Image (tube, rainbow, N blue to C red; front, side, top):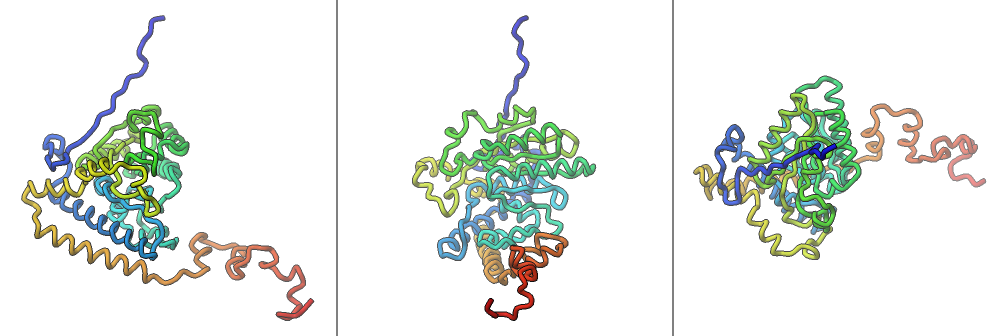
Length: 377
């Protein structure tokens, strides 16, 4: 029996707007208008302002650990615009703030969450977003399940996108979600923000794959690598994947090559493991810089508009911070009432007594009911 090839594949790389703000007009056809780009640029700048203030809140002791989105904003806004608000589901990790805001999450919820208040995870009714996921990779299983439910229900116009980093693709949950999504052919988009570092471990040391995108080949899933700092490329890749999903073509995988310009979180010091020359090289690829260059080349942006945006971003973020820090303290009832739609009697006793022991719930069993409070035994 002669040798024969049983499988061949290739992975394409997509870039439409380069680091200098030059646009490939052919590839950009039917993607973003200049007005769209202005809108997305504004969203990125507001998100960057929120990052900067959140960092100061943490350093001043008013907030816990916070993961900045700095450098990765194009992934959030490009994908956020491509997904259908109010119909599709966003299943985030923790560097997709702008996409969440674009799909209806009040901005102060992000700060509330990182201040340790779980009400930041209580997503408003009608906003199709799951809470932030700090555990690495677990939420991808949820995304596959949501997509499967949509398929079972016959919701043909609904797709799901889930976000994660390169490090998450080394987790077992990633492979479980990918295998399930592919086998069941669910309308789910797996969006990997390859920011080169799994905390302090470089991508090259935590996987032997030449690309992250090629991992999708094992599941016979359409896959592409894109410039994650290019809003045009991100928008097109996600739009194509969403179209495929709602037309019954199953899941897709997108590897967005990007970079986190800040530390992993405010509890990290990336100077201990990253070369500053590497960081400086990526500073030149900042999505905000290249997007502004493009708008200026179209005579759609200038210093006056930039200053107006800077002022507006500061006003918006100040209002967001005020809303987050002025929220009333939660009551103990919320532990129960926000978790359960209906409380059974045992849970009512737990809520009212704040005791989980059987003695705390039912003192009669120890004969305590007949003893006056404080009486000796």
